[in-house]
Image 1 (cartoon, rainbow, N blue to C red):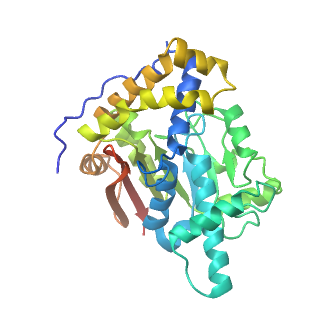
Image 2 (cartoon, rainbow, N blue to C red):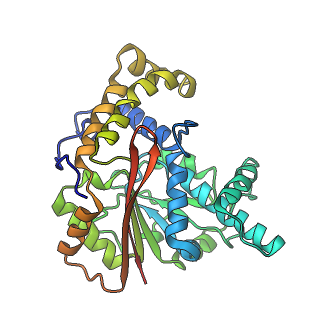
Length: 334
């Protein structure tokens, strides 16, 4: 059913060139925090965990067959957490299946995964042997190599491309321009990455693109990838907007606890509340910009790409009981 609220491609403050970079960095840090934040009773799990579950469910046994490339990674976003969760699920499921000959439920997999990842990224993390794990690669048209390198220090399955990558015209040899802090030899890592087809990811990003650019990105995606997933944490509903409005008060309640080492974040949250204002303002605009699965499907039909042999699906899932829903649109080349 079409949403009651029409789509409006209004501007977001964080996208503007005049918005100070030091404030943009804090806004992006807050967005990453919300991707990974879990509020019991109000949420079934953290949004990043919801994405990893969705990927596992959508792809089934093929989930370990791809190299996952985040095309709008920003400062890192949810990808490091999704990488850890998905690899932990894969390793734990494989370990349990090999030990007792049965498949574990996803809940059991995640419970065992939390124990395994508490050991740290010292080589015992999921997929460290290059076997059942999967690799994630961070890219962006405005790369953040400093932030990405810090994230990559904690996982040998997380990599990044330090040069700008245009999602509408990505190079075919994308994974050859790779920086990694993996303890594995570069040649071995490169061989593993290139041996698996790319699966493109767009986290909280696709609503930023006007229709002509969105069509170009979809066209390039169909031509040069074997799968893709578009994930948003909002939609054009009253519940979605209401959920965004709660992010301001939530920032005031949590920033002192999670960002107490960052005096700049504290100042621009509590003294001059620019960061919470931008989060809420841009969040409401994001709701108004977000496309339905049917609207993305229309862009797919208009983009000029050959979609024969592709399986396309879309859906929504509740992530917060105030009405916040994760919307997704995914395609897999059969």
